[in-house]
Length: 319
Image (cartoon, rainbow, N blue to C red; front, side, top):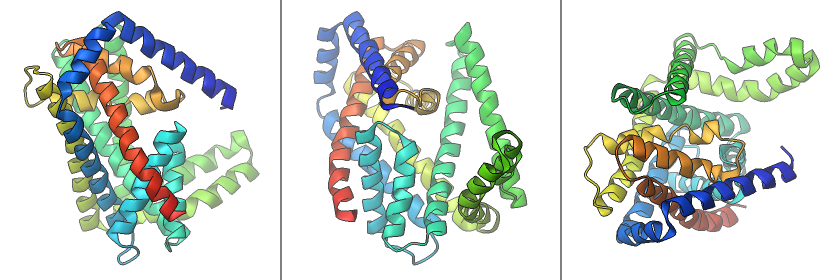
């Protein structure tokens, strides 16, 4: 995607965000932001804990005694800075973590394999959480018309993704390399072979981890579940400080419901405008004020930027 297109998409997202603020009322949004109060201290701490747990998952995805946990945590923070400050999401942040792991002394295959393991298992748990949240919304009748059809399609896609994961874990056969080889008929054999040569070493590490290291696999999955729970606690903190009555499932439904934003709207830098729109729709579907959803989205942007600022220091120390 060209820089001009990215700038135009970012500008369009900013316009959507501005229109949302105007429609819901700037004074209302400001009042809700002020009402968050002590939540502005708790929410960044919860997010830092989330990153610390994901760092543990990445650390445990590496071969034993490769790097210390502190080094991996610093690399995770550096990756967070890359993700937030470049508006590229995981497309640049995940490879950057792999490069930083290599620079810290890990072999290329093990570094990128571990990054792939951690990101895949995080995404898998995220997909399950999203599917559960969306199914609950469907059962409550909160999604109708086009939203209902899109949700059913998304849940079906998560099912296919899960089946592919189970196949790879049970058989030890990779999925990406065979798929790339099959695309050779379309994109050209030479190009496909070059892509396979780049992908195959890391996929071997990934598949071997899922197929042969059962205890470590379960451990990393548990860590990813804990990381997602900390994000749900962020939502609970916001709902509590905003004095909105909520059940214990509601924070998990909100967190699960927003999981697909970065995937569906990957082409919008930082998902600016798209993220805020989804939050407002989701909050309305749950019976909360739409303005509260927009407020939570803005709070999460602020805390991500705050943590990214710390990550910038980590990035400079690992460069």
